[in-house]
Image (cartoon, rainbow, N blue to C red; front, top):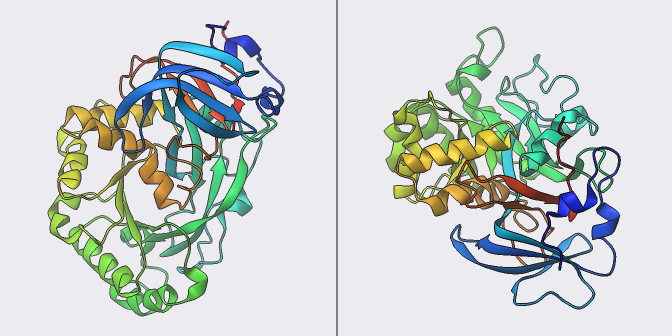
Length: 364
């Protein structure tokens, strides 16, 4: 068996990635020493079998007969990272500024599949992103769910309609456009939330800042029976009692080495109230991992941190049937790290998006 990295075996610098090689009837088997489990814990490794772009099995003691085999000593396999709020691949504006309510706007209309940012995201371990409408409007429009590489290596592929983006913070109330206040906007917001046309899989992504904004948003969405994820609130710790059972998750980040500890402790505080956390960093895998590592340093359980990079954001987007965890039958979106994904020294050895290997960056 070959004890070499899969990408080194293919050694491509440009042109189509080896999608065809991974989509033949004969399976490909990857040997790793550990796997991030669906609950975020680190489990024993074994052979991961990929066939026709999907995971056929995990943890086998031996590869199937006829499989192309690749071994990663010390490697830990994890589901590809998922980012719920990005501008990746946007060609043109992501907002209609003349109106405050634009539920019919689709971020997919601004989608540029050949944008170079997708390859950079894939190389950093991000396999699914949501192209997100601007926060300038109270109802910004529908997210576009994207894979960071398509089957031919040319760019991302739209994989389905995403949930709606709302903004309940001051950004959506500039003062020169009606409604000029949240009180004035509430009747129209409630009317929209009651319409079947605005119901989507996953959770509505709602940008909020203050505890009062959090409360009124939660009240409006709960009354309509709608799932809500809070996007980058500034002081959610002042509204912790409002969140359990009402917010499907809170989206935080990105953090860097200059981020105050008050902020990096928020994931721990939320997790203690059983409120899931997802991290966002505009599709930058290195920044996502740093955000998770800093949250762990500030007390977040490592299992919750790994889920914040994968399973939780996939669930928010309604994409958890195919992404976010490594399980038989799911799309083969996976990353092999040289250790725990939360260890920033652990290099990425392999990225698969839909079973297709992503080319490594050329070295001088």
